[in-house]
Each structure stands twice: as structure tokens, then as C-alpha cells.
Amino acid sequence: MLKDNMKTLQQFVEEHPVGFIVPCVAVVGILVLRRWKAGGVCHSTTHLDGKTVLITGANTGIGKETALDMAKRGARVILACRDLDKAHAAAEEIRKKSGNGNVTVKKLDLASLRSVRNFAREIQEKEDRLDILINNAGIMMCPKWKTEDGFEMQFGVNHLGHFLLTNLLLDQLKRSTPSRIVNVSSRAHERGQINFEDINMDQNYHPLKSYSQSKLANVLFSRELAIRLKGTGVTVYSLHPGVVRTELGRHFFPFMALWKRILYAPFFLLLKTPWEGAQTTIFCAVDESLQNTSGLYYSDCAVKAEAPQAKDDAAAKRLWDLSISMVNISMTLLLGTAYTRSDTPLIQ
Image 1 (tube, rainbow, N blue to C red):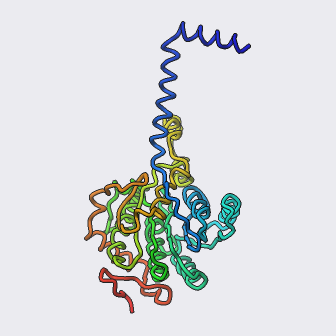
Image 2: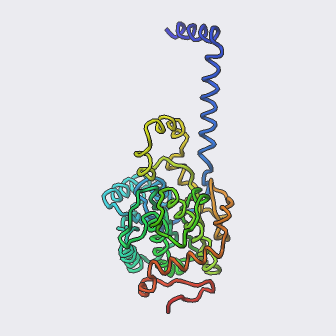
Image 3: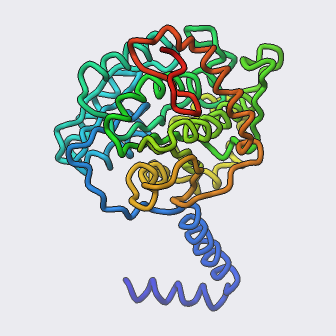
């Protein structure tokens, strides 16, 4: 039977050489392209025994893969999630795969500043230290929704929620130095502009423009925060994880026309897996070579140049001041302290 099959294949190749070679070349090309799209891999062997890592949105996608990696390195891992059922299921899976039982779940809804404050209070009261804060959670290209506090949803969740959370936990991060803050942004920031005159896009909302604005805000926030934390032992990183097959696109793809979905189907095969997409986050969180750098932007486990508008220090400072006002950080005196560029308290 095998000999007959080989003869049939040989006969086909001899009679249709082009018909055989073209598919083979196409397959090899796809495999090479797929490997190239997979990007860099974090090779750090850093152990995190005795360290505490907090990851927002860690119940799925790259956040879950990041949490699993941190757990394998021996860290105490806190999954900060909105959906507690999914979070507890993810935590149990992480415990089994990592052999690390020190994985816990806490409720955090980044679309609610009240929830952020309550969460930060619990972390400060119950956690002795915080070594790595990974602001991973996000929402992408949703309809014109508003947060509990009336902010445009993508800007509110992707930027303001993490902005407030980070500021509230700065004192704890400082007490745990050397510590790191990792902000998951996106290459979409290259299309972004901060619409200071209509930050909630009430006049002209567009899902992609809003998402790009929020991702630019992540990079500008990282840049400004690094300046304010200079010399404290807390370092800051922002990154593009790549285009990854996760639930992040759930608001976008269902509304895509059928013909577009068919046309783009081969492209979806080239998307990164969640494990591949998590590599740059992990790199920024643990790689030893980054311990003396701060405020830079990364992709595929390497430094990358941000878009010109992401290097605008005046815009970064203006965004910081606007964000302070929007989250009303003056009401959080008992939870944390925000710092000016000179590292003196904004609020006494």
C-alpha cells in the first residue's frame, strides 16, 4: 500500500511539477512568515521567590500567560479581574500548571474608580509588598459606552483606571524596590492623538480613534511616570505585545462583514498565540538587562522607537494633569500619594 502511494505521488510530481512545487513553496513561506510574526522570546531565568506580582486582566489571553510565567518563577501572583468566575478558574489552572499555590484572585473593575480605590485599599492593607505591577487589562474598539464615572469606556479603562491604580500603589512599590511597572500599550498608539479639547470624544466618536488615543495615553503615562520616579528604584516600561489571538477583538470581529472575514481568514493564522504575545510583557517584568532603564517602549523583547507624538513631553505632562483632575486623586489621601517631577507630594 505504501509503495503504491509513493508511486502515485511520484507520478503526480512528474506530470504536474508546478502544481506540486507551488503549494510546497507556499507552505514553507507561510511557516517562515508565521515564525517571524511570532516575535521575540524572553530568555531570562530570573526567579521571583518572595516577590509579589499584580496583573490586571489576568484571567485570559496574554494576561493569563503572564500570570502563569510569574507563578512558575515562584512569585505570589495576584489576578486582578472583573469577572471573578473566570478569574478563579484561571487561578486554579495556573496553580496546577505551575505547581505554585500562591496564586490569588481579587475583584477589580477598571471601569469604576470606586472599584479601583477599594481594590487599592485592600492591596495596601493585606499585602506586605508589591514588586511588579503589570497593567495589562484593556478593551478594544467597543461601541460608544461610558464608564461608571461617565468617561468614554476605552480611555476610562485602558488609561484612567490604570492611572489611578498605579498612583494609589506607588508608596507600596517604593517600599519594595527595586520594583517595576509594566504598561501594556499597542502599536495602535502610532495612529493616536490625545484630543484634549474632547477627551471623551463626545463630539466625534470613532472606535479605532478612541482605542488609539487610549494606547497613546499608555505610552505618554509611562514616559511621564518614569520622569517622576527617577531615582526611587521604581522603573517603568510600556510595550506592544504584537497582534495576538485573544478576546480583545470581541467587539470588532463580530461586526465585520462576512466577505471581510473570509478575506482576512489567512491573516488570522499568522496572529501570535497568547504565549507569544506575553513574551514582551514578561521580558519587561523580569529581564535583568532592564534594571537600570526606565520610560522606554518595547516590542518583541527589544527597545523600539515610539511614534513622534509619544515622545512629546509637554503632552505627557498635560495628560498627567488632566488625568489627575479626571480621577479626582485628591480624594484618595488615605490610599496613596502622587508625585510631582521633583518627587515631592502633589497632595499633603
